Figure 1 (cartoon, rainbow over the protein chains, first blue to last red):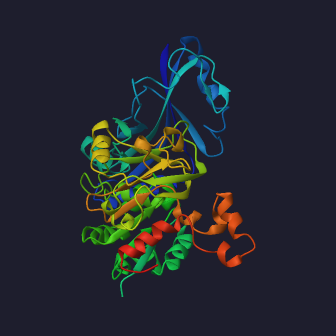
Figure 2 (cartoon, rainbow over the protein chains, first blue to last red):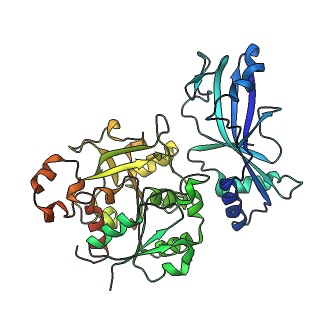
Figure 3 (cartoon, rainbow over the protein chains, first blue to last red):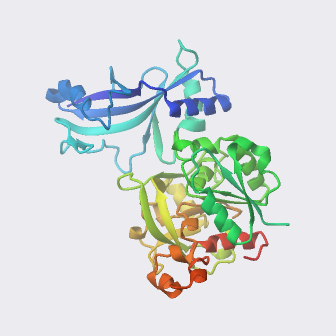
Length: 155
Length: 265
């Protein structure tokens, strides 16, 4: 079993990220740019990992080639300047689906996939060339991006 | 003259007309105030009713962006002076995100959430009943309701499940922060009555002072006799247009608001 991560990013203007950026700036967070991604983390059998990206590209409710870019993450954790926000698991912290059976996503069986977690990824930039500091990200999380009553952050 | 109510409208709000109509029906002088009018436009009112919808398209989280809107600066300031604030559905989500309810933490640092519905996170549109679960006088807007009063409403949301830490939920339960719980038609509060898996069966939240109330189901969508799901109620009014168009059901909550403002509905 191996863990693979994919970020589904918008190739078209992102209204949600724009609104969040405007709000963060209004709150005094030093942020020049904000990128949003739909992040999927899969627990997948070694033998199926190579085919996973091709499978994802055929699930139109996850990836629409007309408006999305599918990015294979080098590691299943946030990139520099990025924070992932997910819903807090109730009970033991296990991936959805556990390890007993292959998962169905959007009505489709994903071959060799036994666990999945989904996050909203926010990547903050202090300038076009420099990602935000950990301090800035923490402020953004605390003031807007996460409601700790039901969400968790992965930085 | 008391009874002047503002209904703030954010981009994506969609229940403002029904809300205004219900307020007018109970004798409240009611005005819509669009977000673009700015916070000063909210001065001079006795109460605020935040209607349902999808403010700012629920971007980031339901109610999160609107909670930081300049318009909410005014609502928060007026609420802290003791003015009445009622939030319905998205309005309740905004009140939670702004920290006004339950008000157990700093402003705009929510200690609870109206989180995605359980079990599957899907949007639900379902007729429900809610039961007054605290002493009526615990909240200004419920003070004239009967103890254990049952009110019909429509639940219409994707994110209406009360979620919080175990400690916070215990505190809310103990101290009467949950004025309404989902129940069946006979008033039995059961897990099955809650359409969204809400903790403690909660349908609403109030604050310590009881001047703010956020409720997830829509009373204004079940506020006239012709909207009642109870067939006997509609049957009794059949053939009588005046009775069919008369206020009923969810209008009780608006009557409570009016009475709290000193207006006789």
